[in-house]
Length: 409
Image (cartoon, rainbow, N blue to C red):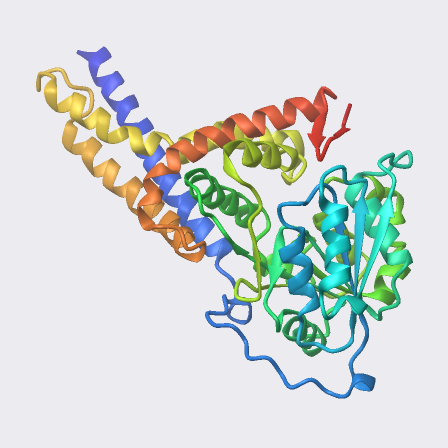
């Protein structure tokens, strides 16, 4: 009898400790990741402002690195050439593409009415020693640019006509030295809808926008799909030629950290109505893309990654198993039960309530149907493997493959 009571007490303690942990986790996550009032999501597309005289508009150099982007390059470049802002240039850095990217760029130069703004720089496939591909391509593009402001963007983005005008106006109004926009994610397929909300959760947990925009916080983040930076600030830091930035695979986060560490003003705002992106097509692309960033992007080093590997199933998978446990408990004999089905049902409601509420709110932000919240355990399972594989490949120097190049080997 004493043994049974001891087991019952321990089981109840573990159950309700788990409930408190899960509820507390999502409450803290909600409070931590909710944007401050001045950083809240913009619900509508800002109206394009009437351009001022060119002498009052600083020249913006748009730097677009591209490597084997035949699927995306036309839409991206044409959207950049059709900006309402009147004083800018577009420099596409073709980073050793072996697909049809160079021919598409040549066709744009020949046929687009605004092609006088466009210049294509072609690099060899071989990287200089100590450089990663994207930092080297951006660095090469900056060397050929003339703008007072630099805009770094990606080939899988496309931009509303007023994107540059609105972003530059906001950067100037807020006194930002580096200004970045969160982008609208296009998620057409099942796997994109399953995985992106989980990735969004992880990013907002580790890099809450309130902390990113707080000059007193050391937390820094930018979105490499849209980064505006003052040329004078970029040059004073040494840009991507800076030793610690040359070979980074997290070029946006690490540049943002350097900017903030050196005392410059960093600002990250929502721009989902201005810039859109489709990062990955299908599970395989998403897997490889997140595997590249999962370990390197985790704050807190190896210890925090281990904590994530332990904690992720606890807060994202186990709550969905409680209904099964309650069903099993109801089918067993009443006498001798360690925990009653009523207790398990109550625990289930308490855990799934805040979990689903938080996940549905993320789905709403990403324009994902609400019922994908029930795919949360699947997403957690996938990211558990991705994070473990990412850590293993980096720590044991097994190599991260990206864009046909190997890193950390």
